[in-house]
Image (cartoon, rainbow, N blue to C red):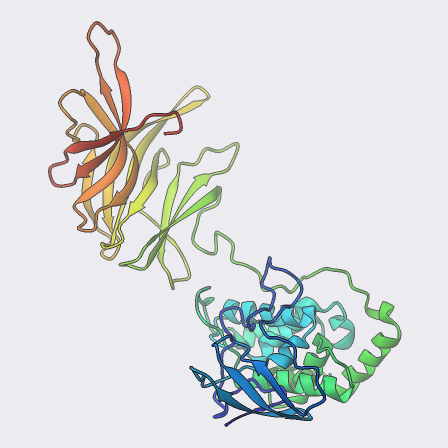
Length: 432
């Protein structure tokens, strides 16, 4: 038997449960997704009987039955598979769109401040980000002062990875419960940011509550001001300005130089390395293409190699089995207003050791007999054993009675040991 009490999001053993990668149960809107909420559960039966049945909200194929008494419910699960925990979907269904956004922003603030859990301070900053009424409700403290204090006192270091889980901590869970209780006391169906703010202030032991109380902001004061806003909404009219969004990292903060755009992402599973190719986007100053890489959990990228201002690294290719990265090296030159480039070589980098294991320069490739010159157009993939590279190449040849070379583009495989090219298929069509 599992007991779910009102707005609790704990299991029967009171073990904290993370809310998932976006901190919201299934059905909650994500950034860029639909604004409406459509949870994966069917309505309750409309009969007058006290016993009601509903499907499991997480869709495990079983069913749940029980009796509903006030805000408490007892469930007895009968199913082919019995989950060990349950979220209280009814509480989150009551959240306004603004409250759901605030929880999402709290996750962003936790990551930006280097925390692996959402705390009361992150919820406070998220409410500041979402509510235009915050300056009025929290006077004499200013949102800028609160933000500065939280950053100085609660920043734990570098921002955490975007892929890491960021669950609610115990303080944040208690605040959500108190916010739900505040809406119940006011007999209001929806739970908004004003209820979450009151729940935050009621949890006097939380860091955010102590921060506000130390600045003379009490639950009574905020409740009175909320009543004033309900009577006269123009006191805190919405401006749609969001100065306290948890900001995204700039390219410079991520370690990527200025003047670049158009990122293309590549990933090497064996080394768990992300590789980004960026191209210059400054109309006045020419920038050669660059490659940056980082471990998937690292905060910053580092540049691949140390090419000069007229050398580019581009067209990366990697392997699914080996920690290797292959890329083209091109030399560029300027003639008048025209900038042109020539293939200079191909390098293969070990992503774990950082050592270039193979470097093939112009003139070292061995082309098929009928061709007099060759160069690499685009590396495509490295073989599982790391000894060959599949790529597209340009091959030039001189026909009989012809005074100039002709070029043919082919798909080929390059043996890194012998440096010999073996054509696989001729590429026909202008799109190559």
